[in-house]
Image (cartoon, rainbow over all chains, first blue to last red; front, side, top):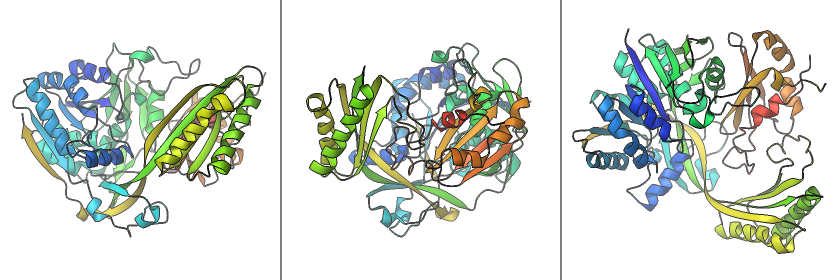
Length: 444
Length: 104
């Protein structure tokens, strides 16, 4: 029986490169997929592109392609990715340059466009999951992109592209599209699309199914986590598949790792919405089929949603974070006093705008809102966060936190401060017929 | 002996979409699934953390695979857009829930 072997070479924008090279070299893959585009990563791409029209794609694209391209070419493995972010065309041209550098003459690289729907979004555009419109946000819009489905990637695959570079497509679509292409599934065969989407959903976060983000020492031990391998899906023509990894890599594939990923970011397991299908994971079977091999079957689906989801990105100003640590006897009282001093200085004396939050790391920072009782600790870090559209406010906050070194409670040390640009995203729905995916193939 | 927690019988993973959090909880041993279903209701989660999970909490049951999926609306302090929580994605909610004692 024909099997298509899919590998995942990245599950998020900053994922590791080495294990992707391993897969390119030794995975005997038909397709190597890099999923690198979170909800907010796109907005940063738009900002980069505004500053430099030849940028706006994944900053690690060059390093990743230099690492895997020659191996993929030698092994007949095609690459599918959303690393084009806000500029798939410039990304494709970079890959062409790299292919020529590597002597891979004739390599075909496709860019897929049509997801940028900024021109369709206006001040009156309403949000899909909460009240309000674009105008209500009160921030500068940087761009809007629609989640496209397999229809966007298939023409590039059919044109024989060795590398397909898209911007916004649904994450599972990156894996589903090669399956549709190779097995010839109809785009209204909801059961097959549901199964391919299940495979894509399980694969799209990379190591989160091979032992990454899983280890809990003494409860869920993972062998050689530092050498964890990326996953492989061996998919059959009936859409059922085995999840595995290279035998000599670290990590593990077990029914438990697969279950945790099955419902990752899923709400109703019977209705996982993508542009391609309403996937149903309710009756999925998960069974051990050998060491680091898990068989997944019984995915299903029904008719795809009428409308497509758009993510709209806005410039969110700046996030400043500064901290000072207190340790030893009475550390908690000194850290609490430092927090009081900073709060008073920022609000009463500096009259700062923006959102302010002060946490005591080591006592109760992550679950403060859950009102989990704080334990005591002799090693506490004051953490002050301020978000503002005004860079000056953020710098003032950092100055105040640093001044604690001489002006605050006794024994504070280890000031660090940083400023991070912020984006804000909201979602809306648009009609399918307003979206027209296009593609272009370049040859090295 | 200290009271047993959900962490002793189950594992979990949290995910986020906008201001909605979901946590799936899976028993290690299928024999513990009826106990998990009894002790970990949507109501239990809501009353354990009323300020954090002030929106609706829905439970989906995966009886074949012995797991529960909890979906908490408006649970992420506005979501990554506005939350100043260090864990703005609510990734640590999995262990918040696993830390609850088992009430037989």
